[in-house]
Amino acid sequence: MAVWIFVLANLGFAEMTDQELERKALRIQTILEEHTLQEHGMLPMFVRASDYQLPTAKDYAGAYRHRHLHGKTEYLCEIERLYAGCGLDNIPRGGGGRSTRDLYMPSLMMELDPWRHQIWRPMMLGSWRNAKGSIQPDGTQLVSFSRSLGPHRTGRSAQWARGMVSAQRWFPNEPMAQTAHHILEDLDIDTFRFVMAPEEGKTLPPEWKVEGELIDHSSLVPWLLAYWEGRYYEYW
Image 1 (tube, one colour):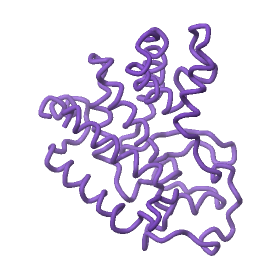
Image 2 (cartoon, helix red, strand yellow; image 1 turned 180 degrees about the vertical axis):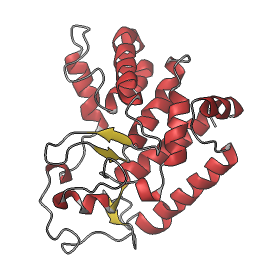
Image 3 (cartoon, helix red, strand yellow; image 1 turned 30 degrees about the vertical axis):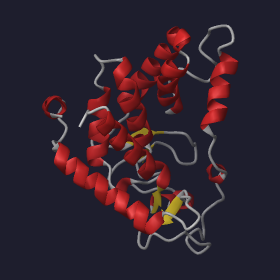
Image 4 (tube, rainbow, N blue to C red; image 1 turned 90 degrees about the horizontal axis):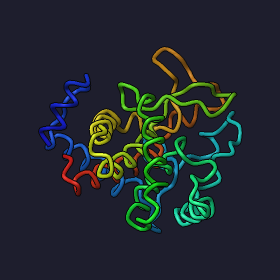
C-alpha cells in the first residue's frame, strides 16, 4: 500500500509499487510451478540455478557432507515444544528471539491459545528486535552459525519476512511489514541461497561453495508465503 512505500523511502530502501511486486511474485511462482515442483507434489530443498534440476554427486564433488541436509522440523513438533516449555507460563527455553519460528509460531498461537498472550507477545517482540538489525540492503540476512563458515549472508531472511508479515497485526507500531517488504523487494532468484559470501569480493570456503550456487527452496517458498499473506492482510 502507498503508506508502506512512503515509509520505506524514508528508511532508505528502494521503492517498488504493489503492481511491480505482484509481477515479481507471479514470475517467481511460475518458476516454482513450472520448473521445480516435482511430480509427486513436493519440493526439493535445493535445485541447480542453471536448469532447475536436482543436484547430483558431480555438483557436490569436493564438498563435505553437512548436518543441515537431514530435513526440517514439522510445525506440530514446534507447537508441542512451545506447550511443553510453557507449562508454568514461562517463555520456553530456546525460545524468545533467535529463530524464525519464535516469530511466526507465537503469532499463530495468539489465535490458537489467546489465554497466553503474555508469553507469545514477548517471544515475537524479542525475535523481531534480534532479527531486524541483521537484514542487509540486498534483502539477505547476515548470520553466523558455523565456525567453518564464519559470518555469511543467507536468503532465508525470507523466513523472517513471513514471520514479520504474520506478527505485524499484533504490533501495529513496529515496522515489521515495511521490513518484510524490503526483503521481498530485494531478494530474487540469484539470492535465494542458503549461504552466500558476507560481502562482494569475498568467497565461501570450498566445502560450502555448492550451497552458494543452488537455489534454496527454504528461501524461495517463504518468500511466496510472505508475499501472499501480506496481500491477504492488504499490506501491499
